[in-house]
View 1: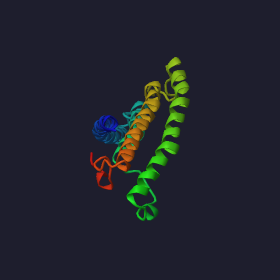
View 2 (view 1 turned 90 degrees about the horizontal axis):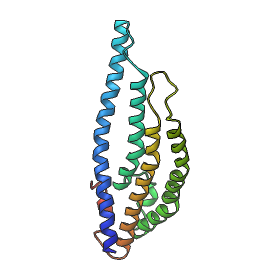
View 3 (view 1 turned 30 degrees about the horizontal axis):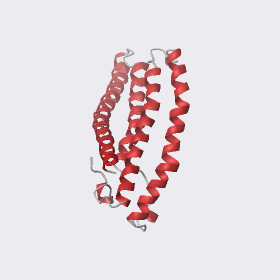
Length: 184
């Protein structure tokens, strides 16, 4: 079990690193949004087209990446939504079992489904070097490539959470607890 716990710690470290990168990505997203607004405003004042479809699509792609990869970090922080009215009444042992069942029968199959079915989508996009249909738009194939990557990382983080819950149920008290929430 200690080998698996070390593996879980490495996965958690990867997710923590991803979370720090996402924090900077959020800052970049805000700056790009501000630039887009200023370009539209100044362009309207000057009678010149300063805004571009490329910048708007870049902003949209950054937002997409934030959502896709943010799910990994939120799972790491144990921050996903739950029905706390019910969950608060359950014992920690019951909560651990519910998490295990959720990971095994909901999260893992969904991630595998998305990874499997997105691969053909990505391959077709790369085969055509797919571009946006908008004039001045950006290539779409690099961002589409990140869909199976993000869901693979989500599956990895789910494995880490599964390891922690199982270790806790086997008596490794430091492996997981409700007090570990938001510990990044």
